[in-house]
Image 1 (cartoon, one colour):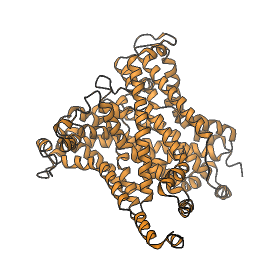
Image 2 (cartoon, rainbow over the protein chains, first blue to last red):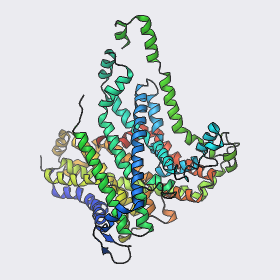
Image 3 (cartoon, chains in turn cyan, yellow):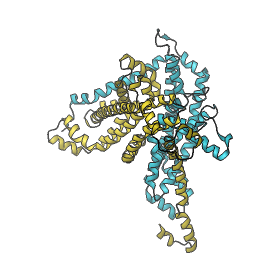
Image 4 (tube, rainbow over the protein chains, first blue to last red):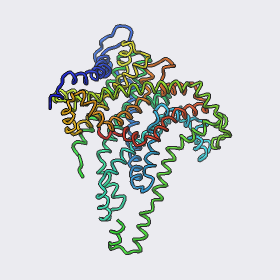
Length: 293
Length: 293
């Protein structure tokens, strides 16, 4: 019976087209990216090999360091504000005896809207004159509470983080909720019989049992915030005064506006390596402390 | 649970009060409603704004629109070419999704069911490497590659690139699913004289339908919302996809909130309609990749 599934022509016909596309549009750009990183090149004249100068330049480039810092600000905010909120709301939805399906669908709505649209939507909401956010603030605290959200260098990053949270939290809530509802019912019932209160049940029982999904959220947040691009580009494009610049917007500017293809690629490579290292470390850590029911 | 408590040692009166407090879900639902309103209110606000004039938005922010005038929608539809962009998006998205599904299903079948174990394992690991690299690191070489292939500023470029970037995750999900298909089904097919290709088309594809729907939705939403590649690889106005078209419109109409609101609403409505009908599939599809990953 093995014969039917041992047909080299079918095997190749099923695999080769995929591999061709994958190598052409994926593997080849990865390799080329690494190669470009060692050259100085404006895309038109001859490439000049400059060794690791591009990578040395990164360490002394204030804008790059600022961008890197902003990526970490993004990450810190998402980990410290978004994820606890996600966990809290997922717990609350899981406790609700009615309307659970409704809450789940409602929180997921922003997830299906494109990031470009979310960025535009928040651009409108943040407007100084008539944006919803300033109108709410004026109503609560008077004229002085209204702010120039996106054009104030101190507020622009926060404004993007809020928009990003609005869009992404729903996705994580649904992930987390699924994990919580997956916990065998007997565990919760046993806890109640033993007189465990809701607070302890959440911290000592639910939290440890949903660790795998918290870890997935952590991993997605770390890699997602290091490569964040769309929302920043449309809302502020790194401005004002590069206060919201992140690595990917900076790489694009260097590559396509300043036409420094070598240096732009080097930033891309640095970003790639950073993501690889950080997710690699996280995976190591998680493997060493797995929990079983 | 109540039965167990009544059988316990707590005095009936305290029991009644504490279980009333514990069972009252009012505070829980109130908090969840607050969250749901925060999430959905911006969309509602935008909907109301889309029927107002620019003056009304600034002056009567909280009032309902004085009349339901569709002027803004007409203006947005005509000047933003949303119809054209949506059509382009649909074309590119569907073509890329179908290509992804056909290639991934064939490859996942060959790798998971055909009898070339060692080779399959290597190829599978090679393809999964694609999950690690952020596309953001590859824009510069990708842009040059597409230009060299004379695909710059065409829909074909987007279709091929979108298809390729969806391949690793799609193959990952389908591979896992196809591996779990019982081999008895295959044996029956082989008895009927089917070859590998016949088994794929007549046996594996039909039983894999649920997984195929999931990956189709995952790829569809990803492509439909994709912004940055479409912005880099397509410049002709009439070829733009919805997210890029919207972002361009945003740049031109930053102060015309009435039209902008209408444009955003037009671009959200189809997505929300589809979401209303396919909620469960969409939520499952979008979360499938990360839970298994």
